[in-house]
Length: 237
Image (spheres, helix red, strand yellow):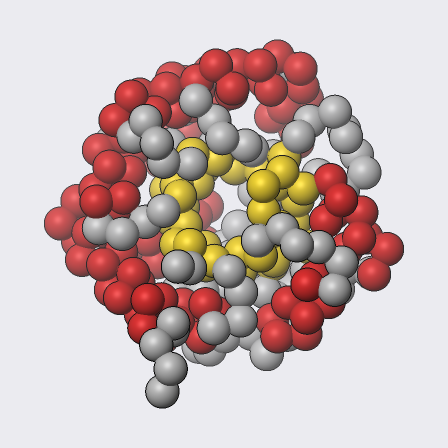
């Protein structure tokens, strides 16, 4: 079974939305910790971050949201996605300890290259532009699964699945047995199915946030459509 990961921004409504997403078929939830200068994120996630910051969602508050989500979802992998500047301000060791205490399964630091802060166990990201040496290092250090950034650029909807994904999957499989989850630029059920035919899991962020803006029912319907498409990737023909 292929993994479906859904990204949602931290805020008062996230625990309920995360529970809704999992009930609709998500296997893993990424929790966005808002940042004022999110270099990897496109306009939808940027706007969601701005709203979250306006709601008071700083690192400590986000950890409280994580803990509340963990209470609702005791078995679901929950992975905060954040930026190195936030952790520098909060304290690397303090964050690692507090995130674990709040129920984090792992953590993603979008702008922290493999090899830096190696004491922070985290999901590593690689892209089509990653060198073979960088890919090997990330594969060696990754925590649980390897995040394949399907394209060069920010998050956001694209018209089709990046043609670079197939080559990146092939390169990654040659150096690791860790599960490979593809993300960035995957926004429709059709794209999710195509990515699932190549990788072990799919991460959907921008379109999940857009659906969540319509409320729990809209998010459930969208996640359900992703789940159905990904499961269809396993059926020959």
